[in-house]
Length: 417
Image (cartoon, rainbow, N blue to C red; front, side, top):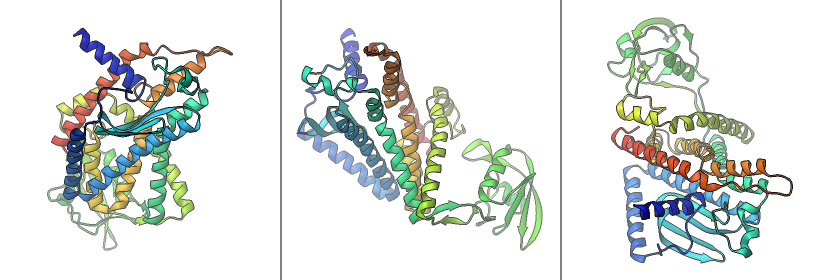
């Protein structure tokens, strides 16, 4: 038991707190293991493509985003005079690697991320005397902050580029037009029971006037399941009033449900200047929503509640790349590439925000330590934080992440989004 605990501590110390893999580790590349892993990963990608090509497109976009995240760390580290010794896609045992100069490039068995190893991330990382000047810990605070936030900044750049590209070439969704029912209400829904028909234009729900699709959605969400409401529609130029009782949304029992599908003006192409303005605004807005999402995602009680109640609010239940891929695949079927790219942009913003959570092993944890050391340092004397004190908390965070991953995977498989 003591040996196992020591081994776990050393792994935590070397691969999580220090950052990256251990050089000269015993998991040397194995040809048979590499071939087997490549076949398994290849088969999974082929299966995804056959099942839903849009899911494959979304997953490929995520993998590219992960790669570019690490490129951000790698390039800024080298530009600021730091020494990077590893650039790996994936975690776990090495499958393949090659040295080029002082850097080992390669792939590892578990395709759930990537990492760049920069020497001297903190006092626990042993550095050769001749390399001490190039260690992360000996660079200025601005350089440390640039390198450690470069991954999240890269996600924001990716998201901005995707938003601008879609808005300029495919259009931005515009719901400023009237709200019209474009297909018959769901059978047995409150709308169908009330007598609302395809082609009706909704102009009010309860006391709320409705002029856009989003306003109709907001008016429904403000109600509660079981509320009796008046729905005012325009039919053949004449306003008619229908009374119905809102039901519970099939996807979330806490949200009211009317049962109609609506249309709006659709996607409207934007000029490059407008695309840039809208893109910046949507990145900022999505980042703000992502902060709330991070708090919700890291709350283990939301996971427990989601396991206990299948009707729990979808906004608070944990999800994984499996769930996000399911959504991406469905959006691709419904609206094509533009919808997949917009979802990918939003996911990049969320990952960028999530990654800056100020605890190890997130990049935000390293940024917080760098800021703390800068605050505690005095002129001519640089303060060094005792990273050993962070290992117990980091272990708890890793355990929480493992729990959230397990619950998210279970829910994504058994209760697809």
